[in-house]
Image (cartoon, rainbow, N blue to C red; front, side, top):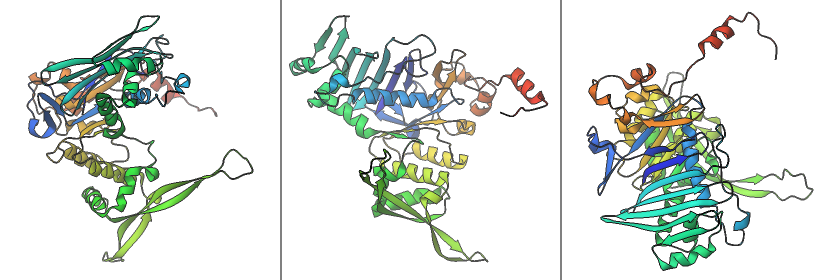
Amino acid sequence: MLVDFRVKNCLSYKDDTLFSMVAGSRLRKWKDTHTMQFESLRLVKSAFIFGPNGSGKSNLFTAIKVLRTLLFNFENLNNVKQLRLPYQPFKLGRQQGKPTEFMISLFLDGALYDYEIQYNASQVLYERLVKTSKSLKEELFSRQWDGTQYAYTTAQTTAQELTKYTRNNTAFLSVLHVFNDPDALKIFDWFLHKILFLDEANRLSSHPLIRKLEEEPFKKEVIKLLKIADLAIQDVTARRVERREKNTIGYEFDSSEVIQEVDIDLHYLSFDEVGAPIGTETINWTMDSKGTVRMLHLACVMVDAYDKGKTILIDEFDTAFHVSICEFLMAIMNSHRNRNNQFIVTSHEIELLDQPLRSDQIWFVNKSFKNESELYSLFDFADLQKKRGDLSYAKRYLKGEFGATPIINEYLSDQYLKEAEVSEP
């Protein structure tokens, strides 16, 4: 489970920025439904990040992807010299050359892992892994560059022996994973199988999850969600197809690759002129609406993730969805049915602020005048508890009480609207 994520000098996040799934202390509202207890650690089941376009909401997700890429940058021992570090510093404030810093805290198999890493374009500068289980806190390793060489400390002799395999541009945690260190294996398993990004970049037809629609029990659960969302879909048919990747280089010989994908047909009721049902008609999913396809994908994700302890990140949650469908999905995320999955969502839909959410589930991203992303939680507003609980968060947000709202340049807007003629481009 994701506990905390910290980022500095990556993309639009210049300064040290913390995102946390830890439930707020002394906050009891919807404690039984909206939070999960793991020994002494209580986490919220979902977090919703609001902010204007271009504020950096998506960049928070991308930063986690950058960390994942960094860890999986170690392909094999022979080619490691040629690997490039995924260095994407903040570019608008003379941060080039300064290190990018990540810290992630994960709760895995009853233990809390705190992993930190700092690096620049050419090498890793600092790295540390701490494990806390019950009353025992142990530093598994640390690694520090002093300008000429690395200084290592390791809890295990076997780990110390692996330092000789660790290049300047390689995370030591990656080397431990290659050599089957049990703690490193758990962390990498989370990055491989427990975190899922759902965004517009997904190619749904080749996604392994969609192939599960060929399984009848899985398909039935997905259709339940589609019907509740009032999509009128009666059935779904999945079938394997082969797509031939064309050779675009222009050589005479044919080197095209055959890719297996899944084609989906959606079955709807059809009616006669007086409204009586006369059967079903089939619509291929490529011809259906963007909202229907996205709902199908999300339904597959939610059914597959049931009781698996996954962390699901959904970018632009309200894209192509009516607010009522968003509210229905939020209800699932924060229900007793969701026992151990996490959902982290970005959205523009202000109405969602007034859904049953705790203040520690609501986050805002604001873009400063220096184009730096600033992330903060509604829970951090000290005067929040002093005001009436029935006041609308959405109305207060629109009034600017929480920031993170777009600021329209009224002078330029007035000038633009007053222009008598629009010149041809």
